[in-house]
Image (cartoon, rainbow, N blue to C red; front, side, top):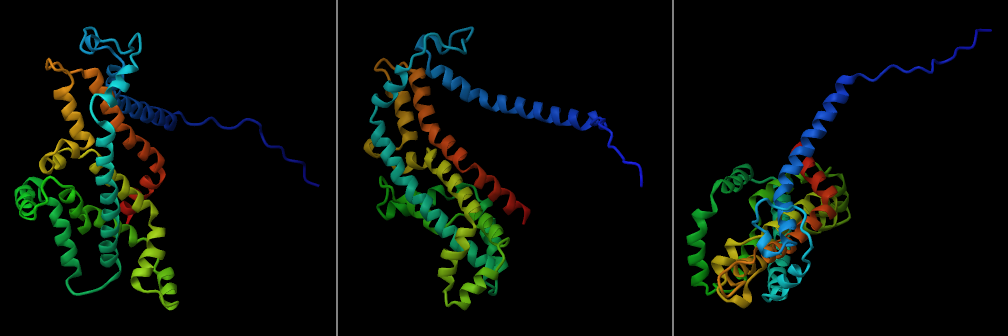
Length: 292
């Protein structure tokens, strides 16, 4: 009978090299995160200051006392609920139209084979290199001829034709989806449109969430589009409302920067909330699309 072997309770020490690298990596990430968060922290601090203390030297990062009334004043000094409704009326249809149109075109590029497909896809990507300033005047003239100026149509209708970047992103994700489930649906008699809606889109939730987040942030924070096409104050969005607040806060022409910072944080909040809610899908959509 062989003698019983015992394991030594002493385990080898973990090499210090990897731990040092991990520690330095996390330290660098924390430092960069703090650097990029500094403007938001300053906005939060200034929104709780009184007006005289916003630009006081030295600056007090922790306001004493806290002036929470700045937030109440931010939503009452101008018709903020109306601006919020206007922004939602633009953002919601733009999100839906952008996702559906971009996903439909991307599915065609990913699954259909037709002459000139690659050249057409390359042309679609080439439009991303065209600055918005180049098409700004022609688009405005077209919308003016149609009588759409001072309406929401110029801000919504272009989203019905998809976005080149989102088409590219969704196409790359669709290529990672095995076609077996689509073949099974075709055998059951489903049309291409039904397969796209019932089979492909549910499997592409991470990519769809990514497009939704990007579209929401871009539309919610858009300032130049509403400034160019909307003339009536009652049709203004939140970003235009912030600009009005900067010029109309006080009759004497003095800007209440503490109130303006409070309003800016309220406008920023939905972007942060949506990102953290959909963060898991967002990261997966980006990484899988990039991997393909």
